Amino acid sequence: MADFWNPVFDSLHPCFRQLQNIRCWQEQAEWPEVEMLTRLLPAGLCAQSGQPIRFLPQDGTLPFPELYYEERIFQHGIVATRPNWHDFFNALMWALYPQTKVMVNALHATDIMRHGQPRTSQRDALTVLDESGVVVAASRRDLLQLALDFSWEALFWQERAAWRREIACFVLGHATLEKLLTPYVGLTAHALLVAVEPAFFGLALAQQQAYLDGVMAASLQQGGLLSPAGLNPFPLLGVPGWWANDAPAFYHNERYFRAKTRERKAQIIAAY
Image 1 (cartoon, rainbow, N blue to C red):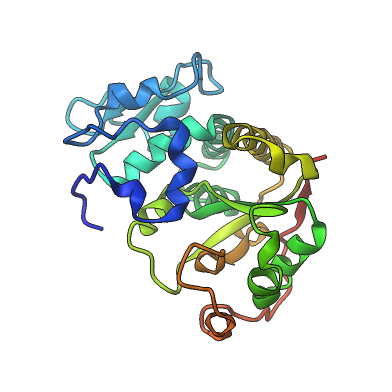
Image 2: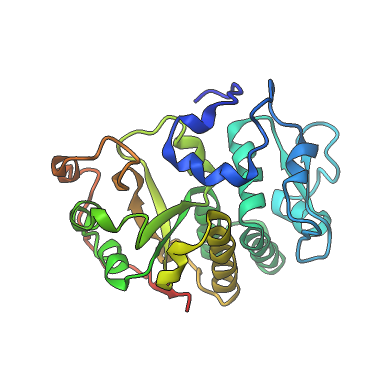
């Protein structure tokens, strides 16, 4: 979608229901101001350096222009933000998954201090998670194993009744949210697979998101994502209700629902 503001964007795809607890845009005629976006953040949220996180316009007034994007966040708490969908969704993800975003930034900053600005494998992985990541949480490990095995028809069709009761997909990547404004067959995210207790699916959405935020941040801190191979490809439009996918024939598109051709490093994160 072109970068024209649309205050009813959340009606365009079911995934945007995940933003319901931080809605700030209903009556906005233009892009929400950075001050409004900053007010969405948890009180006292700071980068690991101790600097309070805030959004500032990415224009000629942006302080510390000599610093790299991630360095500016880490050293000064400043998230450079433009009036476009990409940065708007980035701000919303800071509000929903603040621990994860702080940890991703801290790992970027540490990597830059050690290796300089050229991207390492770890920074590539962090960027993919931040831009295109989702979390697939399930109370049955066999469902997550189907994702690891690329058994897409079994996961999305044969286990259709399990969705939203025993398994769910939570979008973290702001670039993926941008793409879901105008979804297309072929849209693929990169997933962290998290095993949760059955009680997880009785929690309110905000509680689920806060729980997964803590799980992701802890996993990242413990070195759980050192290369992009640690993320599992995930064809998003296979999720029941996220596309016109209510017939098994949809899952026979092998160009989209690809078979597994090699072993990967992605693993199931045990959150209990």
